[in-house]
Image (tube, rainbow, N blue to C red; front, side, top):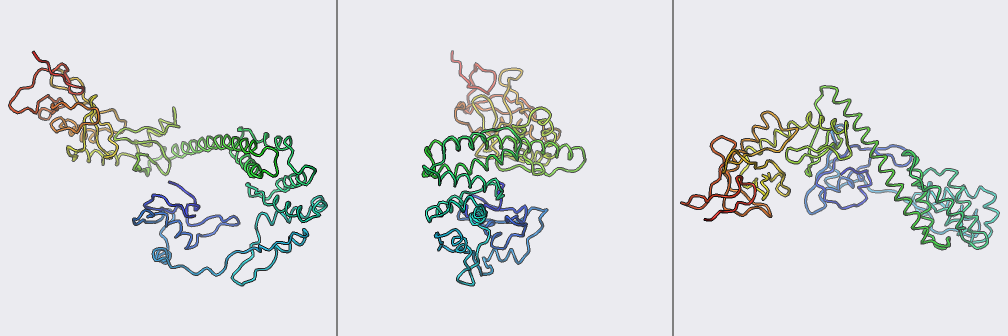
Length: 447
């Protein structure tokens, strides 16, 4: 799983290890290094399920400072000396009085007045507008203005457009009726219901519609709050889907460009296979490896799929050889035979993967064993896999659900690849069978 520093907000997940790709962040004002408590809070996501976890860094980050590691492991940090504070005693008699109460100094040295609160900055901007001052003449209207200033700007830009929108909302709410006109609300929302454009445009529309989603949950401001809630939620879903498609396409394009550049050289590609079978090459997911069969990412087609296969061939040779060595030393319990003649390799044990199939041989009692086609299994690795598969017929097989419970089993003759059929019945010859292979169910013919 890949996450931002927000993972440190107290989420409990089944993680064994946290690897830091960066030890810095942008805190809304400027880039800065993570503090020791922040690193500890993020690293602490590992080992939440009554077992020890671990943490570390990616190679490009370098090793963590030893003092920092010790502080995290022993949970010893510098004491918190100040906390942010804002007065809860607000003066709603006049607009200037409200601004002064928000600027009130903290009553204790350990308290630090928060100066960049979004609603406070918005109120300061609204207070500069003569039209707003002219209609803010009573305490109830001043409280309404404060509520309007708390409408969030999800673009986090405090742009003039947001202040102008809030001014319009405040004007409608202080007019006769005290509600936002349906026609005006619809005009504001419908123009956002577009899924064309690039990533920046879609992100901006999502920010705008989220502001309207917030407004729709103020039923005292609207004629039909439930209808607007449903509309804004639907628009946000459509915009989010469109943004996801654009981001996916950009990722695919960047992945393709990156792989083209790396494949043109002779450098060794850094690759790995996740526990679920996902193949990652130089940090880019490229597909799945089930047994020895590679499947390119489902979003890749045509030339892109061929490029991913090439990257897999270049980078997975060590993994293929490792799996071939596991096959060569596997025990009887690592394989099973299904009713339709498929030989399964139990790697991992919880999810067996197809390895080979039984196929008709030249005559009765001698079925062939065919390894499933693989673009990655070649040369010596293929021979190492074929020999255990060839000998598999002489081992008792573990049957999958629905497999043939017949006492018959397959084995190979010497070093050949064609097994013959024998029975487990002691001292008796096997009766003739209707099928000339041991892949399907064998029915005895009785005279």
